[in-house]
Length: 525
Image: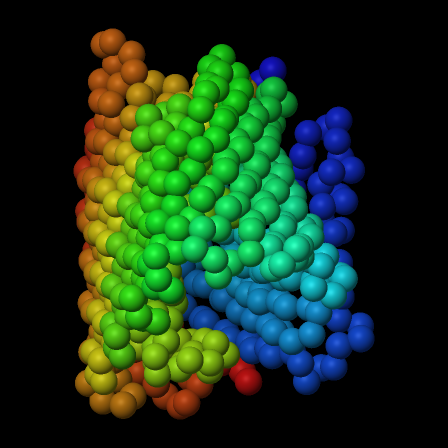
């Protein structure tokens, strides 16, 4: 059966036969976030900021040459953050709606939502917990379409993704120090436009482990995952593993795994044994290296990560090859976050999490840094896909200079068929989507109150056709930014930015955009 499409701006909608699912899920998430009746107000931390900006652009809809349309855009963006890290309830939430007005009428005024909320409620002391999350963010529909760094420009290739999730779980100890966990992760995602179907993922995981501290530690895990794209029959996956870990010393261990999997992906079914191994090495509190490889139905899946921090730097290297059920922020396909890179560079100087978060926010305001640096675009498709990627990144924070840099290489190929029919699917004619690119942001403090920022993002996205006679597609895009940020007071700043974007695509042709942006930001405390 075909999944249903919905007009832009529609709210959360699930499949008609199960309206109780989304209402019950929303109620459960709200209950976790709102359970503060017995909590002292002193245990909450909150802040609010207001950003007012105006952008003059010569190509507001990112039209090809000969179809440019200029406009003057006004954006009002309040941001409310709320956090609590004590007692039975822990919460971190940030909501930032953007009210966008187009003064020359290039399109109707819009409201764009940006919400990131995560909470944990300890229902039974040290035994029963409930995690909840709510996410609203802007995502690109097609990785081959134009991608503007400004959410108010070129909106036809973007949609609002809305995710609710709840994860009840129990955890405890048994025997002489062993542990066990049983967890159910339920996630529901809908979209505001773009012919994208609602998606529900339910993942049940059970883990048990022997007592640590011995030479050999035995453990096991089992997971069942069901992914439901709209009205289509769900994809399911079963995977069980046993693991033996050899603790060579407190800093280094190696492990081996063996198991069995059974995956029903519509027209394709994969089952068979799995086996592999890996290592975990942490030579210092500031350095960690982890690697693993496993024989599975897709060949050899692997994961490698390395992290090293110094007093003012953070170095990361990530590489992986595995299957993914759906590429959304809730599923871990997030952009490289500026706050995360800064957090790594400040860990040694600010070991306290709260103090470090406050310093990161101060630097974001005073340096006028962007929320993200260059990163691959999530590929939205009603399929199970295989993702292979390499992503090194570095953050350097000196006395007057800050540098953030990220590179990426990613190939996404479909594993399953599309059972929804008539739904936006980039793999309907493509056998593979390849993305390569890099992002750089460099800031320099000329004075204690004035900072200059240079930024550049370059990427290339290409496809390999799955049908004879169908051409391959390619998009190349470069965006350059130059900004000056000045602090009028401790909590008030103004900035001016010049932006240039160049896009060359076999689908849309040549696109150019030039823009000037002025903004005023104030933090209410």
